[in-house]
Length: 498
Image (cartoon, rainbow, N blue to C red):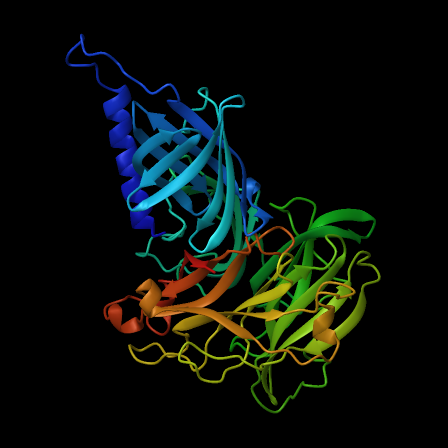
């Protein structure tokens, strides 16, 4: 559902609430007639295609008003959906009529519940609502809808935000790590963090930016740190127990070459973060067989983490841009004891079936992964080659493509199929580009995942992408080079329904 539709629904809710609660009756003698069933019915359970998704919903309430009016409001992380219509009772069947659709609920008069079993949008849905006249709609408001600019500094300044790692904690808290610069006009990458809290009107309110990781002078990541990926787990380092792991790109170069991958740990999801210096870089380009010292090569980077066991075993995905080409690597690590990390397996991800937004053959790069425990699928969002051209900006892609691969349902561990030498082929879900977003460049995207890097809903895929304008849109911008485009990098949400 588009954010515009949600906003219109919110306006209807506010207007209707004002009419119902904000005004006295003009004719005091007019009787206040209400149906015996009138009141609030609050969601207690909801499944879609057999998967219980109740906990993903902040609230869902069906309000029966007067003799035949109904208002149905549901809030989740994507926003507030409000629909209005009428209801009819015949026997024990309560029909809720919204536009051209009719939802037939079974009434249990003893329990005062409404139950629905049927198909909605080609999915098998069950819902149970319990009467609760004490329920009130939350009245808090935010400033960012999911499908619009989530946060960022003024576009009048020279800041950038891109390459997000996003965790949805519960159903109303969003943690976003991203790459950004610390000072206006200075191209030095830090890893920034903001915490978002969902508000009653379906919008988000984000905390101020916190730069949680920076380069360390004299080390392997002395120039930039970027491209974070964060998951929850159990990791011990130098006698301290940590519950969060971050993988990130680091380098000592100024020309986007010879990148490497490192890791850091934190006791709390909000930090502070401790670099695992005894291990870093965990993906060392300079000691790898692919390293060459006589030409420009991109190296290793853009990591994505997925938990294998909700504890210390992880899948580490990252891009390799080497003399032999660009491809995606995956490694299975046991990082329970970071004083003695163990690489259990490694492999190259297949490019079979990988295409770009135009349907041409492509490779997986600059990607984020997520595991779906319900379908046993591995999902990926990756940038599309070739990069878009024109407008003075030829270093960014114009689209990202979402795909999945089916894993063996009898895996010995999550992701084991990737290392078993079994032929696999990626299936395309959808591409997100200029046509879908309206932006000239769509790049550096991340999947919205649960704390372990798993999908939060098998029926839809929330994405946070980076938008950018092209340089020619700002012919008078005070800083030249990449800045007329770079200063427009901001994060937006997008929802893919499966």
